[in-house]
Amino acid sequence: MTTLDASYTVRLTVNGEPREVQVPARRTLVDMLRYDLDLTGTKEACSVGVCGACTVLLDGEITASCITLAVQADGEEVTTIEGIAQDGELHPVQQSFIDHGGFQCGICTSGQIVAAKSLLDANPSPTEEQVKAWMMGNLCRCTGYYQILESIMKAVR
Image (cartoon, rainbow, N blue to C red; front, top):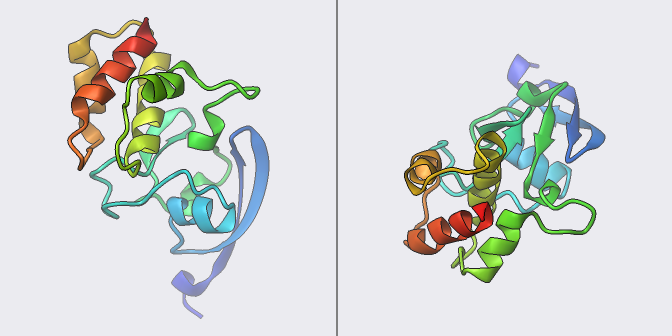
């Protein structure tokens, strides 16, 4: 058996809950989340870490889960779209995306929301230019950028 065929135990906290998952060495974080933990809100679109659809927070930092191995998250804290709402209440960014049509097909939406939440955690009062710069790594194939920007700016207020 090669190292790539080996199975590893990954112990991590996902959305505030301690988890332990047995995964093959080559399992990506997005696949572990979706297929081993049944957290299907995180989407995979490009598989090379450039579109932002698979964005999660790994110890509070924006991470492309499609190019991050699950074993790299061992001992870490992961926040997915499912962990953004608190106590049954949508995060203001989530509510604003609903209220202002910040989504179209939905593939990029979870990554957009996770990235926007990260921005507001780092800078609660960003300018429109700061939002554009921060969100640069999250692509929308439906070209819904105006509504995405509006949703984030309304969440700031």
